Length: 192
Image (cartoon, rainbow, N blue to C red; front, side, top):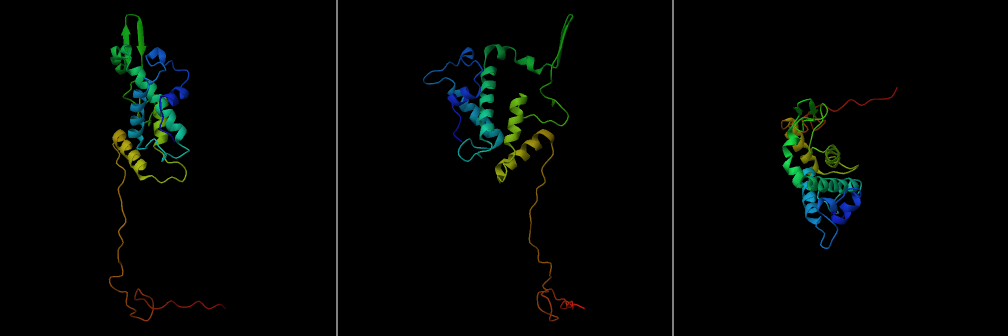
């Protein structure tokens, strides 16, 4: 996978009006800064470097996650959004006869759902990237998954290891002319 750049993000989200948000196409492309921040964000949340080590099965998801995070950052940097940032923390509001109820961003949208990002579309992709591709073994990603589960639920993944033990208690000598466990030799089974 090539690390996503501004051109790739523009291609991934062609209906998003980048120019209207202050990021028209140009040389150099002003969208490169937000894309670099989005690359760092996705990589930090999922513990997956956005390079050739990305499993090919997950590359489209990673590219989409960077595009969505870039759009999210661009919207959040808009002065109108910054002026109304408190609106995101309101669960309900009433002004005279007008009443509005919103989803509480600190609570999960459904019982058992865990939120890495408030935007459900991006949240779903980030959780998918915290999974492993078929046949993939990646302890770093698995550890990051365990980290997020611990942070969001308080449940700590079990830590365990194997230690080889010598349970023979030194009985490895052939005391009875049989097995190395100090037991008599097995009785042979003779067919009828």
